[in-house]
Length: 276
Ligand SMILES: [Zn+2]
Image (cartoon, rainbow, N blue to C red; front, side, top):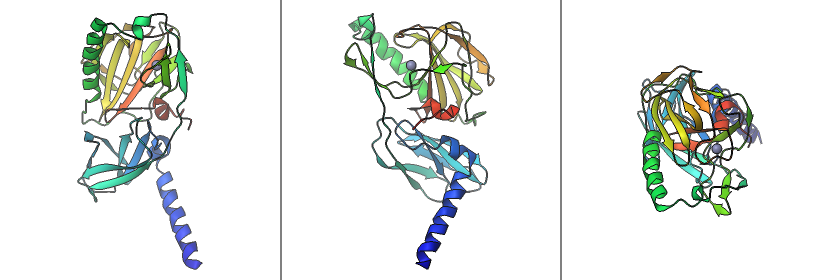
């Protein structure tokens, strides 16, 4: 009995020590489409970590190093492994739970945006490759902030992860978070960053990618106006463009993607608006 009591006390103490760190309390959401904040201990030099072959963000958090890992939306419940170099252990396991994502039916007047023609398909593939390359960007600089500012003030509309059906046909789940705001609303960088890609795409319309450092990438799309070009640096809060309805959009809104280690994760986590 006494041993059991001691075990419970020890577990509680460990639990408290973990919950105390600020980044973990705000960002650790171990579900598909979420984020795992993983303790890497306290080696003198920053350890390096990879997840599913991709480099992962490593930050100093108080007395220790932590990895901030994006968890793909199609991850099934169970253990995942983080590979670590320069830490106390080469492999760290973490557990991923489940999360329910609702289904949404959308009516599009333009059937070509549901079933693109062969020319469109070639264009879409080219544009997809360009955007996938941007998401793989990994630069060493630490982000100015990992709790991100809202890029616009406005009501959150479609959440991340919605399983979408366009005109009765299932399509990719919603990769970002939508804000219901009028055309012309200025869009502000949620953290400092560098513009790595600008385009006018079949699905996403006018689009801007911003690299915040260490694989944390923001993507903003359906813009009416783009105010930046590739290579520009943005201060936190710097304006990059204006809200619109270009590409596959049923009306004006801002669509914002957040990517970590080349994985699109729920942006609501980073603005403290996450609902399990
Ligand atoms: Zn959207």
